[in-house]
Length: 628
Image 1 (cartoon, rainbow, N blue to C red):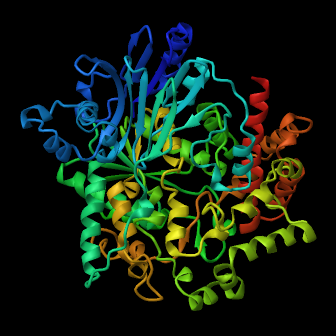
Image 2 (cartoon, one colour):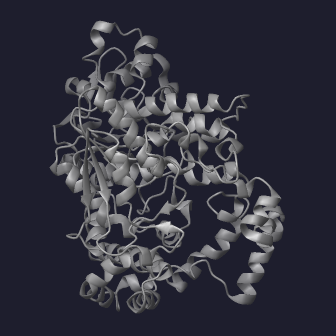
Image 3 (cartoon, rainbow, N blue to C red):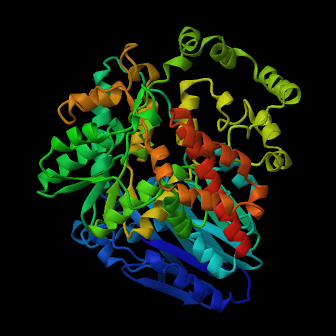
C-alpha cells in the first residue's frame, strides 16, 4: 500500500524545510513506485507510491485542486467503486482509468466530512484547506491502514509510518502506560496512543479536523450499533453471508501483481483461500499459499486438545484447487530472537505476539521474493466469520457447565462486588496483575496497573471480567474503533513492498455477522461456527471444515528456543544492569528459560513466549531507545 505524509504550518510561519526533506527520505521504503510531493509556503503533502491496483497507474497524488482551493493526498484501495461511481455520476468511459484516490476526492467534494462512512476498503487521506488553515484527515472503518501524527508548536506532521515523524523531529519519549499494558496483555493500549508519548494514532473509523483554534476528532461508525436480525429460515443467513464474504474476498483481489495467502489448518484462512482460489481459477490465474510448519515435534508444546502441526489440514485445503502453489515455511533460518529483532528494526516498537515474528517475517520475505503484490489473511475471523456463538455466555446453565460456580459468579455478581473482592485479593493476598508476565513488579506498582484494571472492571471491555454477553466478547475481540492490528499489518506489508488484506474484517462482513443471532452460530451443542462450516461445503474438504480441534501458532517454540540457546543466554546477560531491567523482571524471564530447558510442556512453551520473548523484545527496544 502507498504511504502518505505531510508537514503543515497552522500559522504564518513556514514549517521546517529540513524536516520536510527528512520526512520524504524516511517514507521512501513505502514508495517503490515513486515518491511525489506537493508544496506551498504553508507546508507540503506527500505520497510514497506503491501501485496496488490496475487503476493506481493513473494516480496523480498529491495534488492541488484549483476550484475548491485544496490540496489532497491519498492512499487507498476502494472496494465499492461501482457504487461510488454511480453516486458520483462518473461516466463508464472514465472508470477504467479512474484511480481510487480521485474517487475519494470526488466523494469529499460531494459529501464533505461525511464522506468517510461511504468509502469501503483500506484507505486514509488528508486534505489541506490553506485559506481556512484547516487540515482534515480520515481513515477506513477497520482496514489495514496506518496514520499517525505529531504536533510541535505551530507545526502539524502526519504520516503512515511513525519513522517519518521521528525524521521530522518528534522526540522518542517512552509511553510507559502503553508499554506496561502491552507487557501484561491488557489491550487497553489499543486506540489512539502509541509507544511514543508525543505521537498519536488515528484509530479506525475516525476522522479529525485540525485548525489553529484546536483539534476535533470523532468516530464516524460504530459496529456495536448493529442490530440483531431474526429470520425464520437459518439458511437465509448462510446465503446472505456467503454472498457478502465472497464479495469481500474478491474485492481484495483487485491487484496489479500476483496474489498470495496465509494458509493454516483452520476455517478462517482456509475459507479465504478457498474463495480466492475459486475466483482466480475463473481468471486462469494462480494463488500462492504460505503455511508455517514446525521444524520440531510440536505436540509437547500444545497438549492433547490442540494441534501444532497444520501441514495435513492446510494441504487438504490447498489440494482442493489445481491453481494453488503451496509453500511450506519451516523458517529454520530465522530464530525466534532474530524474528523479533527484524520486527524492531522495521517498526521501532515492541509487539504483543513476539513469539510469532520469526514465521511472519519469513512469510513476508518469501512473498516479496516471489513478486507478490497482495497477501490475503483471515486473521480477524474469530469474532466475525467463524464466531462460535459463545454459548457459555448465553445462559447460567451453560456457564456452569463451562466453568463451574466461578464462571456463574463472574457473570452474575454486581461489578461493584467484584471490584471490592479484587481489592481484598490485592491487599490480603498480594495479587498483582503482572504476576504471570514479564513486567517488573516495581514498574507495575509505579503505574498502578492493578488498581487501574480493578477500576476498569465493568466499565471497559478490555478487561476480561467486564465481559458478560456474547456481544461483549465479540466487541472485545474485534476492538472496533480502536484496534491497532491494521496499523501493524500496513507497516509490515510496506516493508515487503506489498499489501496485506483481510476480508474477514470487511465492514460488510463484520456488520452482517454481528447481525446474526448468537444461537445461529451454535445450533446444537456439538456444532459450533455453523455460519462458516455450512456454506463451505464443497469449497473446503470436510476434514478441515468439520474439524473441532484448534491449532496453535509457533507450537514448536520451545525446541526453537533451545536450538538457539547461546543467543538466548547472551540476550539475558545483556539485560543485567541495563535500563530495561527497571521495566522487565529479568529474574522471572530467567526462570521461564530454566523451566523450558528442564521440560517442554504447554505451560513452559506459553511462558517462553509471553514472558521470555515478549520481555526480551520490550527490553531490547528500551535499551535501544536509551542509546538513541
